[in-house]
Length: 209
Image 1 (tube, rainbow, N blue to C red):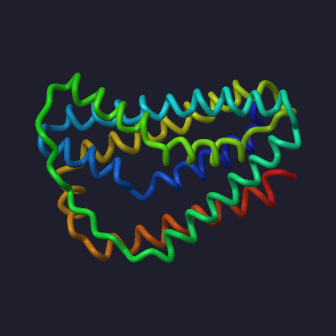
Image 2: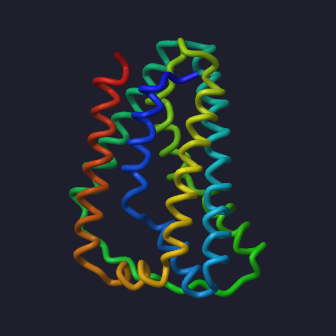
Image 3: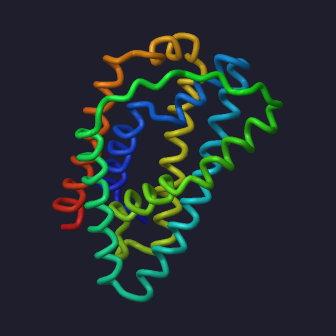
């Protein structure tokens, strides 16, 4: 199992990434604004359930890599770190986008849940993110890689659920502030880009020692 210092670093990194809301949060906020807090919370649970698919896939894939080649596993970790840095640089260089909170079509709660789960499960960007992010905190010498990956992934999804749930509960205020706020868009760009770059460089140079 991961040591306490690695878990602490993981929690800090996850919270930093979750601090700035992205497209999924805007969707959850819109659902909550349009159908109430319960629908927003159900939507958040659905999105993270879809993320669990990618966590399971990462656990199986990383475990297979360790069994086949420790060198290949290390290569994947460094490629993942490089990908995170790339995401950060691309975010910083891109023009700030102002996202409007668009109201989705009203649906039953069951449909709201499965729509969120399906959209996230089929999102290739989510798969790439977990494949790049989770290996940075996996230590093969600490035990089964699959178990470590599942633990870290479940912890990230739990933190994401709490974060998204908070936005769903505060959607009346958050939604109005997010919609068309160009200052927020600029801040989001720099915060998100900086976090990605710091995470990629930090885990590549410090976390692997």
